[in-house]
Each structure stands twice: as C-alpha cells, then as structure tokens.
Amino acid sequence: MHQRPANQHFFDVVVVGARLAGAATAMLLARRGVRVALVDRSRLAADTLSTHALMRAGVLQLHRWGLLDRVRAAGTPPVRRTTFSYDDAVVPITIKPSNGVDALYAPRRTVIDPILVTAAAEAAADVRFGVTVTGLTRSRDGRPDGVTGTGADGRPVTIRARFVVGADGIRSTIAGLVEAPYEHRGRHASAVTYGYWTGAQVDGYEWIFHPDAAAGAIPTNGGQVCVFASATPERIGRGGTGVIESIVRSSAPDLAERLRTAQAPLHTRTFRGHPGFLRKPWGNGWALVGDAGYFKDPLSAHGMTDALRDAELVARALAAVLEGADETDALAGYQATRDALSLPLFEVIDRIASHQWTNAEIGDLLLRLSSAMADEVELLAGLDAHDLPLAPRGRVA
Image 1 (cartoon, rainbow, N blue to C red):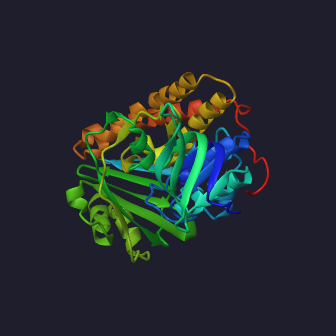
Image 2: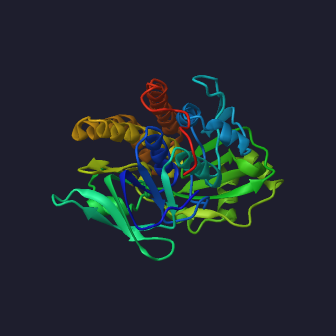
Image 3: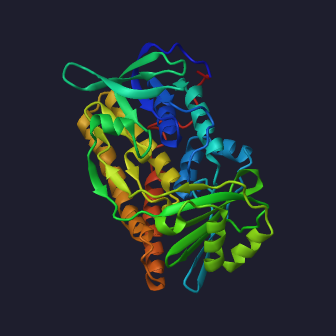
C-alpha cells in the first residue's frame, strides 16, 4: 500500500482503528466513493485477542462483499457442523446452505484483518499504519472535524474530516475524547484463555457448557484448532495450557482425549475479563463501531460477526448523510438497529458469562441466543444490495 505523506489531509471520514470493524467500515465507504482515511497505531497483519469464529451473519457479510473467496484461499477450513454439549445432551447442528452461505469459517486475525484492509485500499481508502491518535481537532462550534497524533516516524499528524469514526476497541481513545456515554452495562465478566493445538481432530465448532466453566474447539488456519476455556477470572488466573486441559478434562473427556494425541501449544493467550457494554455510538460529527461502541463477553463468540454487521450499518448511515440525509436521523437509525439486534443477545450472554447458571437453565439460554442470531441473519440477508456497492471499485491506494 502506498503511504501518503503523514501531515495534514482532508477527508469525508477518518476511521481510527484498522481491525475488523474499522477496515470494513472504511472499505464500504470507499466503495461508495467517500474519501476515507483509515489509520491504526499497530502494523498490518499484527495478531490480536480474538474469538475467531464467524457465525452465519458474519460469513454472509463476507459473501455479499465479495471477500469470502479470499478467506477460503487463505486456507481457512469450512465448518459444516456445530455441536453443543451441556448437561447430558449433545446437540449437533448441520450448517444448511442459504443466502450463499454453505459453511462457517474461523479465520485467524492475521488472515481476516489484512483481507479487509487490502479491500479498503483497493477501493481507494488512504490506509496508514503506525499512526497513534491522541486528540481531536474541532470546529468553532466544538464539532470534531479531525484527529491528531503521531506517525510511525514520530512526527505530528493531523487528519481533517467531516466525520471521525472510532473503531479502536473497548478502551477506545475516540470514545473517551467525545465522552460517549454508556447506555447499557453488563453485570458479569468471564475470563478466557486459549491456544492453538496442531493436528487435533474436531468436528466443526464444538461448544461445551458446564456449570462454573465452558470450553470449545474452533478449527482455524494452518491445520490448527483454537481451544479455549472460559470461567471466572479467579479460576482462569493467568491461564495457560494446564488450565485449558484441566477444564476440558472435567467437562469434555472425549475432546480432552483428542487433544492428548495432538501437539499442544507452547504459548497461550488470556483475556482476564471485562463487563459488556453498549455506548451511545454517535454524536455531532462522530460515530463508534465494533468494540468501541458495543462489547459483549467473548463467550458469545459473536464479536467478529457483530463487528462486520455494525460496519455496514454505520457505513450506510454515514454515506446517507454525505449524500444529503439528516445527520441525526441517519445516525440515530444506526443506533436503533444496532440496539434492536444487540440487546437480546447482550442480555443472554451476560447471564451465561456469570457462570452461575445450572444445567437446567443453559439449554433455554442457548435457544434464546440462537433466536437472536437468526434475527440478525434475516436483517442482513434483506439489505438492499444496491445501496452500497458490494464489489471492489478499483485500485490499490
């Protein structure tokens, strides 16, 4: 990607954060002809904590945007079966083809993030890595009209834009600068530790729910399986292979045996937990997307899917404003749709994240979770394909 001089430029939208939500937002806006700057303090293809699994709605988005073939070409294995284990029940679900989706996928973030960043650059977004945003510029009436920070070379950077979009995670700098209020907060937070087993035999996504802990196996790139354990922060502690294997042994002996014959990871990653929340995702001249605006416990395995969903919702709203729609109406509509789809899932996941449910309760909670996901797919499948172009527009920036 061509890196333009990091001094001062003027855009319609500057997106801060080039991960899943930010890169998708920038791509969709750029495909519409919007002048977009996409910046991130990290480097392209850097790994990050992730839930890995895409649900049907997320795969549907990649299919609609013409990017699913790139995910497949990267060697991401198709998942055609999901198994839920809880109490004494084992419930297998076969993924039935619909809306162009015949399988689920769980790409590593080192795979999916660059795919979306590249697609944004191909659509003529100005992509810059190594840019750390620390402040906002404001017009005379106080409206944010750009960002300030430092570039990879340590020099000051100013990027002016009509809209600033924060896609910079749960501790969002942009959310803090605009003082975005919390409108819903979760009461519980589970900790998660995970690693990659090589050569493990799994049958698609495997989710195991038992009182006091949960576990799962997610096939991903490179012939590896992401195996995770979720419990209270006290039980997970610093995480590690031993914690994962202990929880899997106690809740899923069959999976534990399959892992025993596979190559265990040398390193694992641990998320110590953070209560979920929904922030107000817009204001005068700004918007939030992804975890910056809406974070739910990772036990949902739905964060990546919702990031892609909300990227389209906010991109449609901003494109409409730039084309003459009322700003308040368009962005309030973005929030209303986001909240209507998110709150049912948010409430269920908060309850599951407590790890205080019983075997008698978990089946109903999982059914409610499934219902919320079905509503999401229905909305995304019905979006007007002509409102935002779904095929790449052109060149690499």
